[in-house]
Image 1 (cartoon, rainbow, N blue to C red):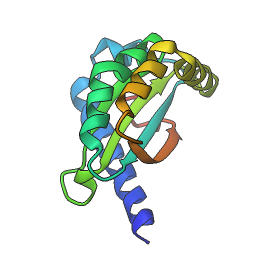
Image 2: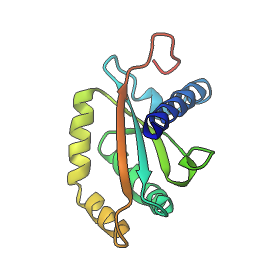
Image 3: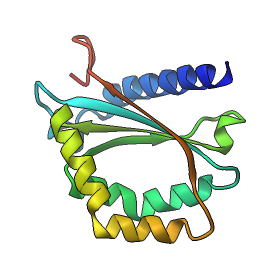
Image 4: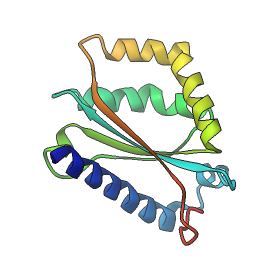
Length: 147
């Protein structure tokens, strides 16, 4: 029951964030360059092991975001829930891909990247970080400012 609620909350937060961002940040080049009829949004929710959220934040800030861009993924936004218990172990973010096929190719290249493998191994020297990963691919609606 809690995981179902957690997923609905995560999805709701991301949809809200996309709406806010579309109204305020649509002019950013990162969104504009991702315009295409096949583009797809990817909502990812990471649940960390206890006490490991800060390590995940550091890995994203210092390595992951730049590597995503290197491999053709457009970073839209990164979010943390405001309320416990999710605020203690959850990172939610949204990426844009040119298509589902492009997403698959980008993820494969990212995972194979030696810089990613090195950053991942270093960040996990004290143990695993991510307990659970959820990924949802989404299309913008016709009335979305992100379309």
